[in-house]
Amino acid sequence: MDKFLKKALDARVLVVGDAMLDRYWLGDVNRISPEAPVPVLAISDSEERAGGAANVACNISALGAQCDLITVVGNDDAAHSLERLLAENGVTTGFIRDASHVTTVKLRLLSRNQQLLRADFEQQPGDVFIVEALERFKQHLQNADIVLLSDYGKGVLRDVDQMIAIAKANGLKVLVDPKGRDFSRYRGATMITPNKHEFEDVVGPCASLDDMAIKAAELLKIIEVEFLLITLSEKGMALFNNEGLVFHQKARAREVFDVSGAGDTVIGAMAAMLAAGAGYQDAVHIANAAAAIVVGKLGVATASADEIMIEIGKEEIA
Image (cartoon, rainbow, N blue to C red; front, side, top):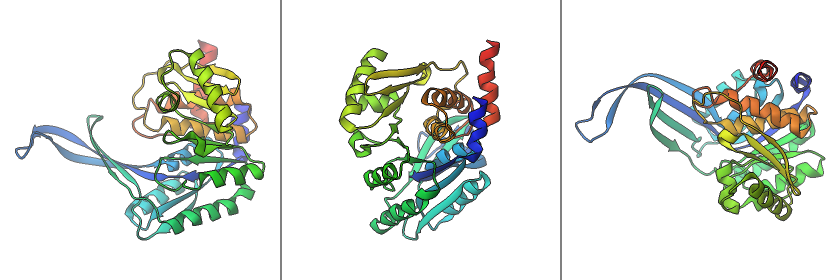
């Protein structure tokens, strides 16, 4: 495992998708509002973190790989904060700025680590900027070792089918974190990475891993995708191809603090490790360890190569 984490230093991942800013307002609740039966949060602190495709990019960079991010943002305070956070994390940004666009922001209000409310600010980008994202994508392909498309349904990946086709024509693997029930949008991709709920929303309930394998194989044949990596929460994750189950990685024993952004960590680690030359089973092993680390942290977070090596090292002790 160590050799792939070291090789990641020479790998370059191109990420395209819906980037967003995660804001946290933190404080204490000591009374109920006299205006309505709601708690009054006395704000004492605040944090900002990269979310969505931006969090994916930060996770890739945390593993030591080089990362380019293409996305559409507004020309607003949230975009400036997002650009600063990405620069601090070593991500090269290819921001397409739409002055009329509102950068996606998820604002969470928390008291004693308990989320009280989430408010979202979002807007679909204009057509001209989506076209520009496709053109920017074409320009960056020659420097990429692998492509990662992070779909949060905010509009940046409207032309995802063209991006997949162009990347594959250039001999690059394409990993997709999907959104919605129409997985045929990602036809031709190398791998898609839904969670169990997202997968069952497409194929129906799965009573067992065997049932899941049958439905995964059928789906992959229909949408012409090579691999399906399904995250199974406390049951780990499973990799499927069009013949069934390839590999099941059990979840690692660790206290779960916050699952926000864990899917970003998984696909980011998979992309970095595959770009570094790892096989699919080794990449899943490393991605599983990375996910175990980030769910033990508050909010969207990253896992470093050193943290992953320590986590994997526990297997030898156990």
